[in-house]
Image (cartoon, rainbow over all chains, first blue to last red; front, side, top):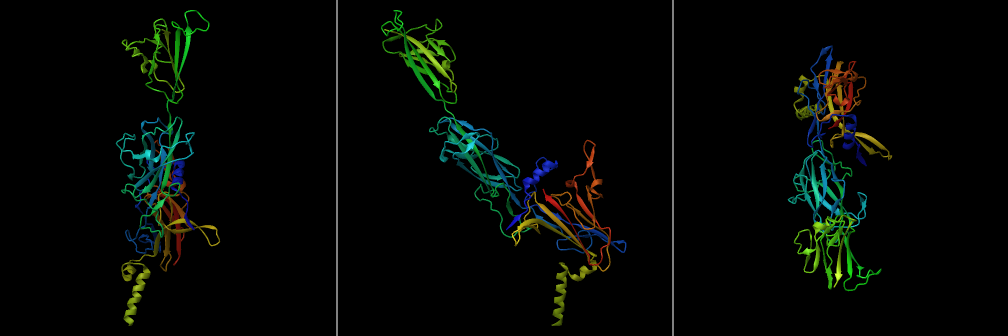
Length: 368
Length: 167
């Protein structure tokens, strides 16, 4: 078995960096197809008389004079090397049903020749990324690949699903997009998604994969040599969707607080006062937004006004305001009102309910 | 019959001299030293006994980061000694000389930063932009010269070698 002496490019570049070599800002590699030419010259004398210098040739030259020699040459071959990396360093947080959940990757042509890249997406099972174990799938039908058009962000106008041409040292961003995040996903679901790039012949829109040149080596042809870490012209990276939802639970507790007789255990008799306490709790990971509340005033009861801070009909704990008035049709626009026998409390009063937080709405009625 | 044989011999002579033009034309212009440059790379292989070994093969598959072994062979084709032998080779474009790789039996090896002034490595200094001076690094050498302090006898060969990395 014959193998090349492993003088890898990466090792060379690392060594160059360690030595502080001035390879230039871009550390540009010699382009594939470049002819490297070499010609030596010998000066000598015969009988102490200097002779005309003789230049070298690949096979040996004895004709003196500048230009009589022939370069010894070889062509720099096509070094295929690429990297794929995940951009953000974090999971992308999505909520079920949201539009355009986007994962971003970067594909870099680390070779010395323009290349194309075929792209493929796959879902992991059980792998750990960013400390989270994969425990859910989006389904490949819900994931599409889009190549960035140049601004580095997904804006929905991208259409390419492969990289047609990427010049040496250039990179391009690739997005894996879930147009609509599946509603079947649950809070704290994690989906690890792998983007794979395979090096393709440039200009084929990823359609014709590169193959490593086999057989006899030829100094006069540009051969293709795979030099990526796995030596297969294919690299990949994993990113993660983290599903977070707001999970609301609502609990209502009724208490007879006064029956007009000062009883220790007030009875629910006509004229008695009943307090209702409704707790809206968010057991999810993210804030619940635009939460509003509606509760019918029970039949045979009448709202007992002004029971909170002397003038408030409704008491709110953990909301934006502490009290509001249940006036007909919310004429005072304070967010609370009575409409067709229903007490309504708007999202302006309740505010966003953060993950793990809760809001309480209280009101009192008198039994008719 | 004899005439055609003669022609054949001339043709063989021309082929042996390796020239595209006629052998007779070359003879008039011939110098004494035949100079040859060869590009090779080192490959490792497993020999018949299963041991790993290295060998030089023609530089055919070469990519950035690879080291190429340049070998220059001088051969005195004259019947008289050749003196003051100096073989000079610019480091090819797109390549960097690999430090301490130049080799030449009995030859004094000097290097150049500008391609015209040659000196031993310790005598080569680079002036930085801020005016300080530092020893030149091997990768800054632009040319190598092997100086043979003795004459080359008739039919004697001299092989010199160095390595350079493809950028």
